[in-house]
Image (cartoon, rainbow, N blue to C red; front, side, top):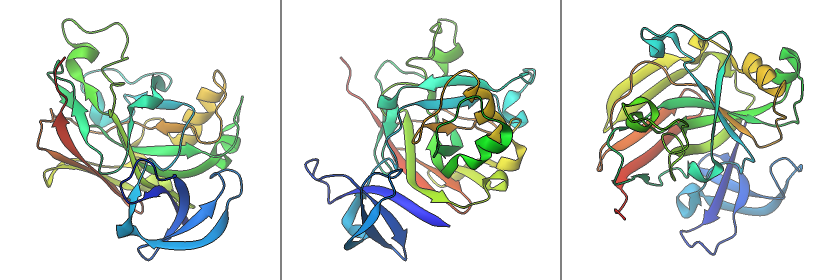
Length: 261
């Protein structure tokens, strides 16, 4: 098992982003891309001296809707994984603010297991899909319910799930973890609001990746949000949202209000 992070030194936007391996609260810098067989640079830093970024740079961000029975409510279970896209521009770093647009009236958290693809997948079998998983991380599929399914909902979820910062990801990628049965917990200001195990997914990771690959080629670095359990609630400025997954860690993000136009 290994823990990979993407980081910069300090908070300067001019600092070059690097990948590293995390061990004992230290991060060992790597030269090269995450999927290019990176090698150690010889430099190490304390985690407290770096700024963690989204742990990879995906070409595509896909997500599964209605993938826990506890989230379905009275809705019927889907026959296939219900896939949608989130724009890459929605991604947010660990500790980065979730910015709620001034026009948004009902933005909810959605704590999720996120899978990072490590190999190109096209028309993959279940076994090939499972072998292509590079690692897993935590995600928050922030969603505005009015824009998603309110009385004047948009026809597409382009802003309901795609606004800037509506996709926090991190804090890092863990490889070699048995991700099929992990405890997932979402907390807002310390209060537990979601709690379930990933073994309760209606469509598990290999089946979902195999299904997607029949229609869309998946490439190294692409990520898949696997769905959220239970009920979600509206967030407000001043809240702090924590998504914790067993064996991975905690993705923490404060909530703020974006200025109006």
